[in-house]
Amino acid sequence: MTRTQPTPRTTRSATTRFPSSGSTAGARRRKPRWLLGLAPLTLIAVLLGLFSLLNGPGLASLGQGVPPKEEVAVENIRLSPGQIELTVRNEGPDPVSIAQVNVSDYYAAFTQTAPTMAPMQSSTLTVSYHWVDGDPYEVALVTSVGGKITAVIDAAAPSPERDGSFFGLMGLLGIYVGVIPVALGMLWMPFIRRSSAAWVRGLLGVTVGLLAFLTFDATLEGFELVTDNHAFGGTLVVILGALAAYLALEAVDAWMRRRREHGNGPAALPPNRLALLIAVGIGLHNLGEGLAIGSAYAVGSLALGASLIVGFAIHNTTEGLAIVTPLARTRPSMVRLVLLGLIAGAPAVLGAVFGAASYQPSLSAFLLGLGAGAVGQVAVKLLPLLKDNSGRIITPLTAGGILAGIAVMFGTGLLVVA
Image (cartoon, rainbow, N blue to C red; front, top):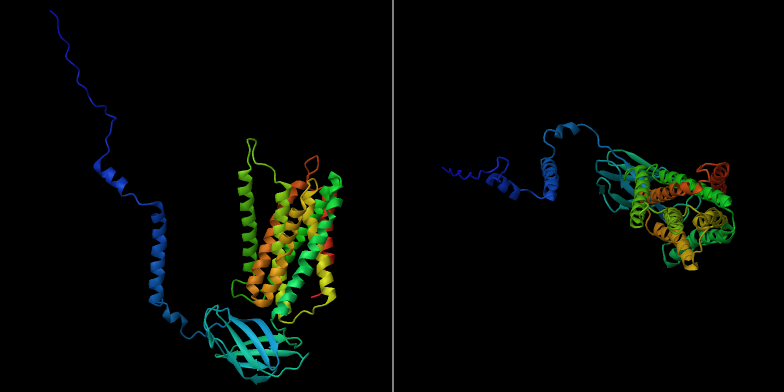
């Protein structure tokens, strides 16, 4: 008797799962990532707003009986017949009012654009005083609570009028100390092209020394500008400027390298791009330098003399050498060389004109910091080019070149009479 086998029942695997309605709803309710990042910022803004509107609940009594902290910096002084004009800025956390102005123990009448300066606010004081050409003066600003801020005029002299001819003179000054010296330095190109590989490494060492000196020189100049001015962070703006320039150039270089990558890895830094980086770094340095020069002329603290022009010209001529040295084994066109020279030297013209028109110490210091960071980044990029056949960067030749570059910049810097 034949038995029929029962048909097996189809059973669902225990591992098979169907999405539940709850998980589906959760997927639909999933918030965008940008919203998750924005939510904490919104909450922080709301809490800070409430804290400010309620005037710091529980903290109002902390300031009772404590005198206000008054920190005022004198940013600029201009002299005209019968008047002394001062630009001051409140660096402290409390409002400041200037109540009296004392010029060499004489209380003088004055007007001001802001009777009460809020934190970080500036004011222009116009003091009526018949000063004598060549005499020294001490100006004391007395605040409403009795504080005293002093400024010294070493030798009174009328400040130049800021008219078209004056700005034209500032532009010409920028050409003298920026464009022409860099162009003259680039005339070393034929000499460099005929040099041996060892000599080129030595000249690259000189370039590293030049850029290293410019890095420290610009940093110290920036620190000096804001020694007595802490409105925007003081010396911190120089450091921030240097970091910003260094990281920006590194990011641009990394992006360009990634675009040039081949199968064997990233390509080496081309000489043309390296020369461009050097020109950009020197240009940023010359921008800050021109800004400082223009502002100094605007307040009459420098005399326009041949010694100053000659000193800057000799000092900045070596910058042209730094630009053309990486191009020793290439044949750049004349147009490229002209563009590199303008990138490095023309910012001095812009800086001189802008500095004469509107001077702000913190801005000048920040631009000098930008220049310091830029030339420092380029100096680091040049180091691999100093390697000899054994792979050493520091050899007697390259070390001597670096020291020679620093010595040349230091020696020519002594010719700049300020």
